[in-house]
Amino acid sequence: MADRLSALDVSFLYLEEPTTPMHVGGLVTLQPPDTGFDYDKLVALIEARIGLVPRYRQKVKNIPGHLANPVWVDDGDFDVTYHVRRSALPRPGSDAQLRDLVARLMSRRLDRHRPMWEIYLVEGLAEGRIALITKTHHAMVDGRSAVDLGQVLLDVSPIPRDTGEDLWMPLPEPGLINLVAGAIGDYIRRPSAVVDTVRSSAVDVRATAGRVVGAVVGLSAAARLVTRPAPASPLNAKIGEQRRFGVARTSLDDYKRVRKTHGGTVNDVVLATVSLALRNWLLSRGEPVTPKTTVRAMVPLSVRTEAEQGSLGNRVSSYLVDLPVGEANPKVVLAQISYSMTAHKESGQSVGADALIALSGFAPPTLHSMGARVASGFSRRLFNVVVTNVPGPQFPLYAGGAKLLEMFPVVPLAKGQAVSIGLTSYNGGVFYGLNADRDAMGDVDVLGALIEESLDALLDTV
Image (tube, rainbow, N blue to C red; front, side, top):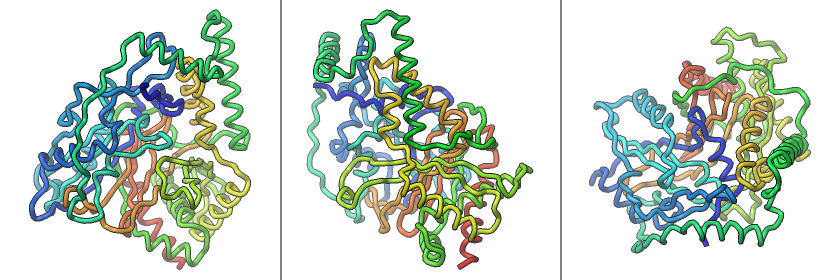
C-alpha cells in the first residue's frame, strides 16, 4: 500500500506559492581531504547512502478527484544526477558571492514531478574550501519519523563508514483504480476522515468554513494568545519571489558564559541576542523605538523527553515571545526573556504540531488548502519573525572525508515575513542563517553583523 502524506505534510504543498517556496535548506562549508573531493565523489557518496532514506527516491502522486491526500510513490525514472548539481564561483570565491548564490538557488521552487530535493556542490571558494547547498521540501522532512539526507551523508570520522550495498528496484506506480481504491479503503478504516464528500456544494462550503473557523479558534485557545495582534513592524511586508541570504558566526562558549552568570538557558541568551540586534537594526533604519516597543517571535523548541532523545522524528512546540526591543540594557533584556520563557513553559502556552494539524487535518484535500491558507494569513497577525534554534553535535563531522567547517540553516519565509532567523550549533560554533526577501530586507547583512555585536554586548556584562 502506498504511503499517504500526513495532514501536516500536505499542508506545506498547499501553502506553497511563487513567493513562498516551502523548502528548507542549508549551507555547509567543508575542507576537502588531501585526496580531493569532487562532483563524482559526492554522487557516489549519495548513491551509497540514499537507500537509508527511501523517501528521497519517491515523488508525490495526487489522487484523482482529490478524494484523499496524495501518496508517496517510487520514481521509476529516478536519476541522482538530476538532483545533485555542480556550481562554481570565480576563484577565489568570496563569502559574499557564496551567500548570493544561496539566495538565488533558494528563490526557485522544487519540481513536484520528481523527488523534491536538490544538492549543489560549489567549488572555487577561497582557501581551497568547497560548499554544499541543500534544498528539501518541507513535506519530505517534517514527518514524525523523518530523516534528512544530510544526516546519513555525514560521518564522525574522515574514513567513511560502510553502509552496505544498495540494491533498489522501484515499485510500479499505482494505477487509477488502485489510487481510488486506496482512498476509499482509508475512509472505511477511518470514517471520521470523510467530511461532507457527498453533500451539495453549498452545504459543503458552509461546513468547510465552519471547520476552518473552529480550527483557528482552537489554535488561538491552545496558544492562549493575547487579544492584540503582533505589533506593526518592517519585519512584516509584502514579499516577492527573490531572496537574500545573510549569516552570523558566534561561539557557543560565549552563550554558556552569559547563561552561567545570569541564569536562564542558552536559548534565552540566543533570544536576548536577537532582541538586541533587532533593536539596533530598527534604529539603523530610522524606525521609532520606544521603551515599550516589542517584536513578537515564533520560537519552535523541541519538547522531546529524556527517553526520546535518541529517537527519530520531530516533537516541537512553538512559543510566542514578545522580544523587548525597546530595552537597551542587555542584562534587563535577558532577564525579561528568561522570565517570559519560563512562564510560557509552566503555563503550557505553546502551539504544538497537533494544533497545526487541526488547521489542515480534514478531508477532502480541498479543505487542506483552505485551512492552510487561513493559517498563513492568520500567522502574519500572530508574530513578526520566526527564530529557530537547532542544537547540533559538538564534535567534527565529515562527508566523504571532507571536514565540515560551518553549517547555516535556511528557513523558508511565510507570507508577509521579511526575514526568518535560523541557527545551528556545531563543534563549538553557533551559525545563524538569515533568509530574507530581496526587496524588503536589502540590509540583511547589517542584521547579521548586529547579531555578532549584540552577543559581545551581553558578554560585556559577564
